[in-house]
Image (cartoon, rainbow over all chains, first blue to last red; front, side, top):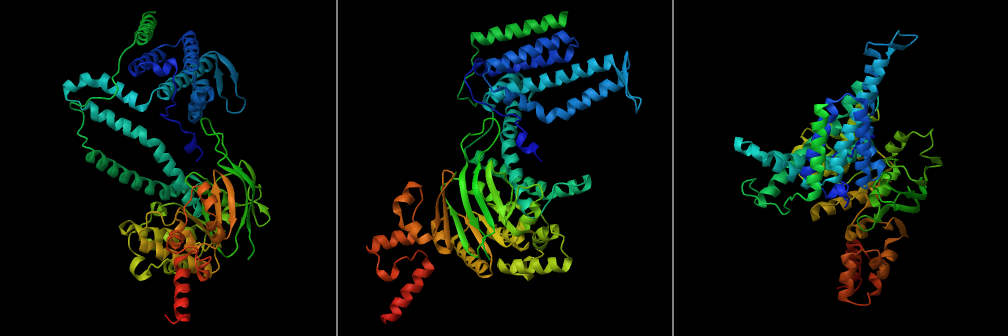
Length: 265
Length: 287
C-alpha cells in the first residue's frame, strides 16, 4: 500500500511567487478556461502550447519540479491503459501487426493515444498547480464568492463549500490514521497480500476502525464548531478580503482572449 | 535469555520532497531482549516512536543495521513475519484498532493469523484476558465498542499478548488513563516481567518510568544520550534539564522535605520501594 504515502492530493506548498500571489479567483477561473480549452481541442500544436504554458507556470511558481510531477505518478496505469486501448482499437493506417494476437497498431491510434495521455497529464498537473499554490482557505473563499450568485436560488453555497474544505482538510489526517492502523494490524500478523479475495478480506481490520474514527472525528468537530458558535454563512465576514489587482486583470484578460481565439479557430 | 535484538549505528530520515533532511534517528546502537523492563524516554519529537517501529521492520533504516539474533532483518532471506510473532508492538491508543464483533474474536485475530489450532487459540485468548485482568466470563462475548476506554485498551493489549511474543513494546501505554488504571497497568507490567518477558515502554510519565523500569534509554533530538539504570539517570539533574525531562515527583518531594536525603532512602525512586523502606525503617525503630 505504498500509494498511501504518495498521495499529495490537495496539498499546499507555501511560497511567495507570482502564482502564489494571484487572486485565487483568477487562478480558479484560469484553470477552468485551460481545462475547457484542453478538452475541446485535438490539435497537437495546442497541446504543445499548453505543455510550454504549464512549464512556464511551474517555473514562475518556484515549486520544486519533482514535487509537481509526483502528482502524476498515481495515475500512471491510467495512461498506459489509455495508450493501450487507443493504439490497438483505433482503425486507420496500419503501422505494425503484433505477431501473436494479431493486434494491429495504427498511425491514428498512436497519435490519439498520445494526445489523450498528454491531455490527462496536463489536466492533472494544472489541477495540482492550483492546489499547490493556493491554500485551502483561499480556494474555498474564492469558490464561495464565485458561487454566491446561486444563493438567490436557495443553494446553500456556504455550507457546500465548507464541507469541501473539511474533506480536503481531513485527507492527510485519514491517510496518516490508515498508515497507523495498517502498522498495528501488521504487528498482529495481518497480511495485505495474496489474491483478490484475501486482499478484500484483509481490508476489514483496516477500514472498520478507520470509519469509526472518522465518525468520531466528525462528531468532535461538530461539537467544537458548535461551542465556538458557528452558525453558517448568513452575515459572516471573512478576515481576508479578496481584491483583484492589476496582475489578476491582465492574466484573466490574456486567458479569456486566448480561449476565445481557440474557440473561434 | 541474552539480548537478541541489536540495533547497530542506526540512522533514519524521512525521504520524499518537502521532508526534513535532518536525521530523525542518529547513530543509535543498543541491544534488547533480556528479561527486564526498559523505558525509552525523551521529549516529544525525540524519535521514540520512530525507533520502536524499527524493531519489527515497519520502517527501514536509512543506514545501519537491525539484527535479530545474528540475522540482519533486512536481508533478503529473512522473513519479517517470524520477527513480528516474537516481538509484539502495542501502538499509541491501541483501542482504535479494535474491529471485531466480540472481545474474544478480536483477541483471537493475532493467533488466528499465526495459523494456530482453534483449541490453542481459545486457550491463548483466555490466558491473555486473565493477564490483562479481564474476566473471560464477563467480557468475552461483549462488543469491544461498548467497553470503557480503559477496558478497550486492555482488550487491545490482550490481542497482542495472545500472540505470546517474547518481547512486548508499548508506545505510551498510560496516555489518557486514569490514575487507578495506570497503577493497574504498572502491576500488569511487573507480572509480565516476572513471567519472563522482555518489556519495552515508551513513556512521557517519569513517575510511571520510575515505578516500573529496570533500565532507562533516553533519546534527545534523535541521539541516544543515556542507556543504563534509572537511579543514576534521575540523579543527574543537569542532564535531565538539558534534554527537557522532569524528575519523578517522589524525588522532587524528597528534596523539598529533607536535604540531603536520609541514607536509608538513598537511591529510592519508586513509590513502592519508598513505602517498603519506610515500613522497614518504622519497624526497625519500633515507631
